[in-house]
Amino acid sequence: MICSRRLVRQDPSQGDVVVLIDLHHPQARDGVWSCNVVVQNLTHVGSVKELEVFGADSFQAILLGMQTAAAVVYTSEAHRARRLRAEDGGPGYGLPLSSTLLDLTQGIQDCSQILHVC
Image (cartoon, rainbow, N blue to C red; front, top):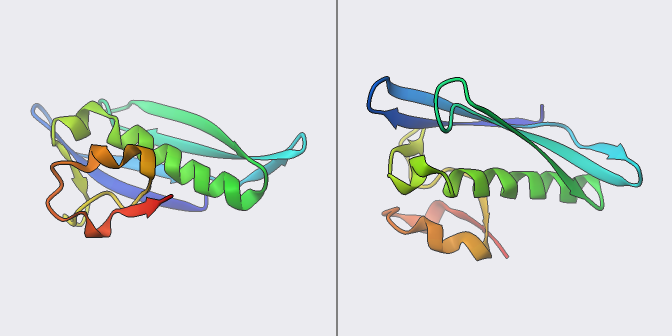
């Protein structure tokens, strides 16, 4: 694993639940690079969403992996219901959001720390 991000989902029946986002090392495969993204506990305790993202090189695979993680988080029911926050309580989730999804940041009071990637 290269990096990990921890968010907190407020669950009405279970209180605060830690959401784990893991980005794994890119691997060369059949002339392209792939990067695995794993998101745990986003929809419910024990839920696991595993995604494999492909890029032309390792750098692109990592960036696309982070953007994919952001898309999963920002399009989740927990985000729409405003039951999701950064573990440290800061604004946004610390994930690079593509410009096509910036409208999903509505409702976040301070968007200055949202990582915007063109």
